[in-house]
Length: 313
Image (cartoon, rainbow, N blue to C red; front, side, top):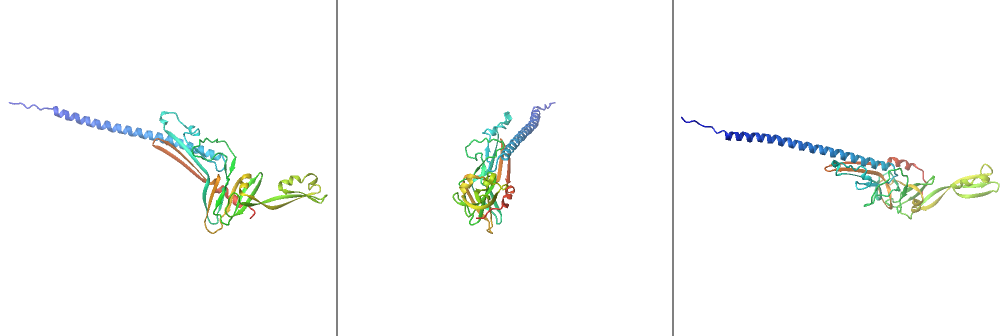
């Protein structure tokens, strides 16, 4: 009688391969899950770093805007001194970059003035240097009230409308008025308040001139004795270039009364402030990026300037 011998070696090999395949699938799945979670963790970490750096850049830029006059501009990147303040030294922080850009002034701009609306433009900028490509910027965030008036100003598109440039002349407010397009040599009219002192004992007018001369109507010429001070106004002319070079914080004011929209083209040698200021802060950490952008229309602050009473040309 013959006996059949069953060869089980092939079956064992198949079982071993099956078990190995299952284990390989499990190990591969776990590895993929681990790598994916590691990537998500790194991405989340980079997002936190980028968000923090972007917010810092934005807040620092806003601080500088707050501490300077209209027209302050700046641009700071991670390659400049200000940008290195938040530079981190840990290995996982490598590649983090942040910067901000403040745009608040221009030497050439077109403004649309709607029918019946006013336009108010500050004809000065903060005395910090405006943005210049290639310059290294590291502005002092301390409070600064200095300003530089615009110069070489040209404005076209006014036609025959009247305009006013109001400013401070030491402790007095003054207004230069005119009509039509503007260039540096064009003259405007200034209404000056003046004073004359009358000495009744001598029946004589003395010291005619600017209102500042009122301080000379004192002593033997004072009204308390036998003098009299009389104030009056007269018109004089001054060029726009001269007015801008000798007055403080000038503002251009115009109202569109043409029954149609008006397009005014501004150009100048030294820049003027824009009524709208914008700041953009960005931060990047490899494949993570954060952007903070803020725009403010300062018309709500300039609006009160249109209610002044000025002399007409």
